[in-house]
Amino acid sequence: MNWLLWLLWLIWIIWMAGSLLAMANAILYARFRRNQDQRWLSSDLEADQASVCWIISMKGIDPDLTTPFFESLLTQDYPHYRLIFTFESDQDEGYRWIRDRLQLETGKEEWHSAIDTGPRSILLINAGPSEDCGQKVHNQLAAMSRLTDSDGIVAFSDADLVCRPNTLSGLVAPINLGHFDAMSTYRWLIPKDSHPATLFASVINASCASMGGHVYLNTLWGGMMALRRSAFEELEVPRNFSRVLSDDLKLNSLVKGSGRKVGFVRSLIVPSPIQFSWNTLFEFGMRQYFMVKFYSIKLYLSAYEVTGFYLAGFITSILAITLWDTPAGWIPLATVTLSDQVRAIYRRKIYRHLFKDAPETLKSLDRTAWIEHLATPFWMAIQLIFVIGVLFRNEITWAGIRYRVQAGGATTVLSRED
Image (cartoon, rainbow, N blue to C red):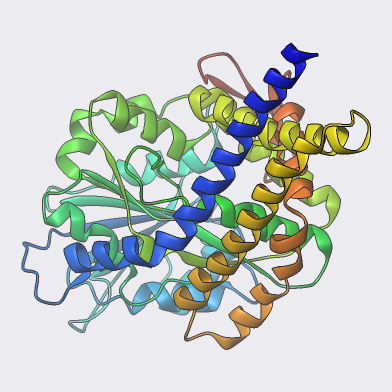
């Protein structure tokens, strides 16, 4: 049995180390955030502010979210930016909604500002249906073809979040300062109800959001990312985006493959309201890891390591105590349980600072406390199911479109919902 005990201790040490590192990261997050803010977000810093072309691929409208999202884009404190909204069809409800808001005349696709604040212009693009890449990527490619020589930075955003006024300026500040060529932040999923699937989704996502900021871990997130125009050209982004499904993971591989590093602004994590059933949660989670499997194999394998060792440590410690007459199992179980509690306390402090001016958001997030404190093995197990569930899959449905993805990431559209 000595070999078994040695194997158990190997699993337990890795389990404890991972849990303690997650705890330490949560404890130190506030210090890391303050250091970043001093380097990038201080009002005393001076840097040339390149003009930004901000591309948003959009489909439909959300009755609760589209209006605040759109208004948040119009009230950014950055002095030089323009917006491009790109759609699959000019019959899209979102396309018509924005045209009405801008009061664009028939036949016109661009609005120009008459004031000095907000975007200089807003362009609407009808990209048409995709055939051999993701619809979102297809929409973005149509927008990229409308870049001008004055666009010094290319930014991208999703339409299911609300940006604070300093979001764009904070995102591109490290680029303007010359610290990074590519920048990103992440979302914090805000529960719109108390369904367990919604709450578990928020906690699982928070475990990723709170890890951002360490350069060796940073990954571009398509919901909010920016790239220096010179890097955009050198990486030949439009050419490399042909036939891909995932915009952010593909761009991430291009950036890192060129020897560049990805920056991440902790203070800019954006709220994104969500509401899930168990079915939609597993559909959402598997879609995320489906993308990761094809466009970031290292990240995909690391998901196995993180969830696998956590669950292996938890299960074997319970078995050691209850069936194998090995009281030593209490040591890792107690260590991880305690570190999980501390991590949960400090993770709560993270979101309470991020959304300190939004009491309703804080109230919604506080519903997740019991999962953070008591259910870590369960949400780790859910993540492992996501990861394993896409192992042998090469087809996925996303926003009503069925795709097949081949090894290497080449994408084909199989069908569309009517």
